[in-house]
Amino acid sequence: MPDQPDNRGPVLVLVLLLLVALLVVAWGVGQEDADALTLVEPVETPGSAAPQEAPAETPTPTHGGAPGDRPVPLPDGGTKVFGGGHFLVAYYGTGQTPAMGVLGESDPDTMDARLHRAAAPFRRPGRPLRHVYELIATIADGSPGPDGDYSHDVPRSVVETYVRAAHRNRALLLLDLQPGRSGFLEVAKRWEWALRDPWVGLALDPEWRMGPHQVPAQTIGQVGAREVNRTSRWLSRLTRRADLPQKLFVLHQFRVDMVEHIEDVVRRPGLAMVQHVDGFGTRRQKRATFHTVARPQQFTLGFKLFYDEDVDLMGARAVRALRPTVRFVSYQ
Image (cartoon, rainbow, N blue to C red):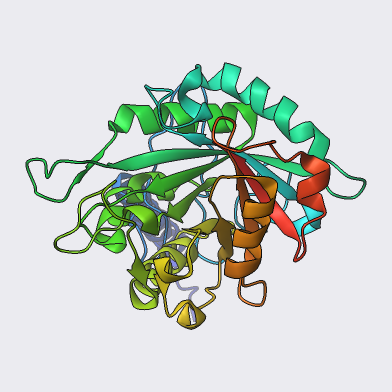
């Protein structure tokens, strides 16, 4: 039988050419997919922090990670305000004017240097200091204003100035609210953009929380536990959603009736809850106010000192001797 021609060679060549063609097509499709992926905008997942504007000259630490990542640390490390035995010392006031406290008597950097000098005597072995700027961001007014709420917000640029200064000098910033006839939660939400910063906390000042017919400076204001709880719940959720470190949450008080049903104020995760006992006078008067108002079973305790109004200004040793123990002092 004659030999048959061997056609396997051409067939193999055709198969190889077909495989090469398929590989080229597959590579092209994969490359198009890769190019398409690079053009998709990142999607913000629920609970992630909104992008923050940071001044170019002083970058502001923001979390920017996925939910569940470790929060940005506080100044000098850690994520707990009083963690590591920290003692807090603050200067209180508002920007643009010295009339409301020492904070506004100079530019922020000069103020910070003065704050460090005032805080130094409170340092103890194993008790490092944190420095705090307590800035009145919403100021009570004696007239109703255009919206009828007897208060106004300082310009955003003022708060931004102190945010930058806090990060430049490694301090905490505390936004103090004097809401007039508005509710604390309503006013706090106007400052959400700043409270998303990992080093910015919130202080409520019931002295300036007016009822429907009350006028600031003509009466002492008051707030109920329910309103405090609504505000702290909102701030706690904001802190959790944005994966922020613990925030200061301060409640000012110098009379028992300033916070109605204070026993019902709830502790919140993510917040360092401070009852800050105010009131000026002699040392005896200040101690009497402190012992009448303080609730150490509910709060970490704070204490205010007044450069101008106090008689015989208490020093660090006298404040440290107070019982129950104080861990946050502010100067006005």
